[in-house]
Amino acid sequence: MNAQEAKSKGMESLFTDLLHPYRIFHEIRSTKPFGRAAFLSFCLSIAILALLAPLSMAQYPDQGQIWKEYNISAYTSGVTNTSRPEQAILDAILRQTGHNVWCGATPGMLSVNPRVVRVYHTPEIQEQVESIVNQYLLSGNRTITWQFRVMTVNSPAWRAQTASFMRAAETQSPGSSAWILNASDVPNLIRIFQERYGLQQVNSPVATVHNGQPVTVNLTHPRQYVRGVYPDPAGGGFRTATGLVESGCKLEFTPLVTGDDRIVDALVQVHIDNLERVYDVNFPSPTGRRPGSFKIQTPRIDQFRFQERFMWAADRALLISVGITPSPIPERNNVPGISALGGDRVETLILIVRQQ
Image 1 (cartoon, rainbow, N blue to C red):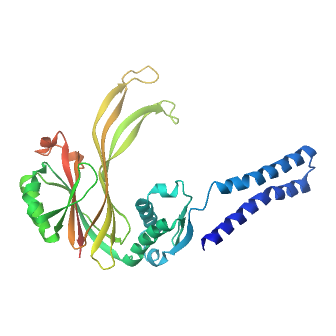
Image 2 (image 1 turned 90 degrees about the vertical axis):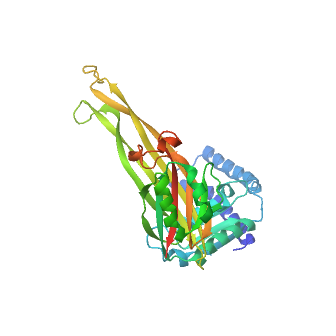
Image 3 (image 1 turned 180 degrees about the vertical axis):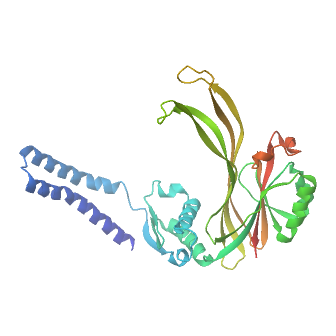
């Protein structure tokens, strides 16, 4: 559909809206008496609509927007691990074009379903969307296996010993760093961490996912606390209610490997939530009869969030230092040497390697 056809459809929709009160008038007139006051009110509404229609159209001048549709079924039809494979494409479009593009001064539209991406916007935005869609179509929906290591060390001094076999990569988040290294150098890196820097590994899971789809590595565990005292509707007295904190680390990884298997374009998100401690309060019974009979707790939760997009050679490994963070291993806060970074703080590292 070209720009002229889009305008025609817009005018047709507007004309339909103008006729809507006329239809309502006939429906009302056929079912009940229609007084003079009601008739005059109806005529006035028609006149107001007629006056405002040109003004409404003038608020949205033509800024060169065009309508395009992109068929994505060749990609989505082969993704079997999720009910909404198109969500990854939608997220990539919003992330790379920017959310403001779709809700700013230039009127536009973005609609995505498992079969097609529909876009009404300027040619510049259309080019960006087409490039993103083509990345998914050309990369394919094949499955790829990845290994993740979520680790902590008690000092950043390891950088001096590993500089000879790692190449720095750019990051934007304050306090973060990243490096590219050969997969064959990973055992040497782990050995250095173990021998001198108090290495603790949260886990080393392996996951097989469809190319372009997100995978979540959930390394959290629930920790309870007593959050309050409430009336018990069943027994007529009072009861304590517990709260829940998912403490630990959650890693979300969304990789897109190019069709020639050369480059990985990936979004890495890390969430760390640490229930550091709870503060106990002896809470008097609401009836006043048994003071101090309830104990409630106020949690102190330390949180950390990280999000970065990386591109690197698919046959290499990516090492990310998200920075000095709360420990993603809360039950191991007494590891020797951690105090060198301040209390229970550690340097949290993420190692990502594609399995061949």
